[in-house]
Amino acid sequence: EAGVAQSPRYKIIEKRQSVAFWCNPISGHATLYWYQQILGQGPKLLIQFQNNGVVDDSQLPKDRFSAERLKGVDSTLKIQPAKLEDSAVYLCASSLHTEAFFGQGTRLTVV
Amino acid sequence: GENVEQHPSTLSVQEGDSAVIKCTYSDSASNYFPWYKQELGKRPQLIIDIRSNVGEKKDQRIAVTLNKTAKHFSLHITETQPEDSAVYFCAALSTGNQFYFGTGTSLTVIP
Image (tube, rainbow over all chains, first blue to last red; front, side, top):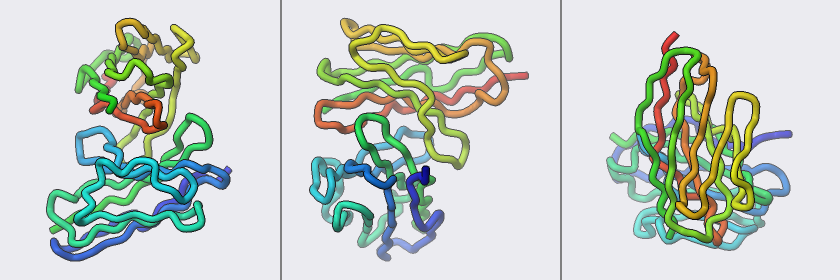
């Protein structure tokens, strides 16, 4: 079974630049999550999709972060403009029922 | 929303000894509690989970216990091995199907 795919694996940008991350969940998984994991901390939920609808985006900094899941499959997470404190690993996860499967993550460094 | 607290943040044990990590949660309606193991630079991997209608679950050297009344659950690793060294995260699945994670425990098994 193919896992959750994310790209890129690593990204370095300057502050105030924009960046986008891509996630392809496990086939058939209706629920997709984006998490932010700052070094030394647990994953923090940014946004949850059920198919192509947003279920929870209460912790998404909407002034600079946006996410979409067109056609209920792939998803993109964008940051514009980036700040130094956005440096973190961005994890995508998908779920069919309860168990969540994680991708490898994208490590973002903002300099 | 749900709040998950995890202790200790770091744990060192001698090879062969047991390790215990504890988590508490705030939302009594949460009904699914997974534990993830994350090795350096890798994705979180589910190692064991427990549902709210079960008090204990065991899988070889790993066990999880759940006390719904006290709203806490624990991970027990027996006969620890160096390859058990990693960061462990507990999580709780809320009624909205959002996963809330603890802050992680860095486990070091000393050979």
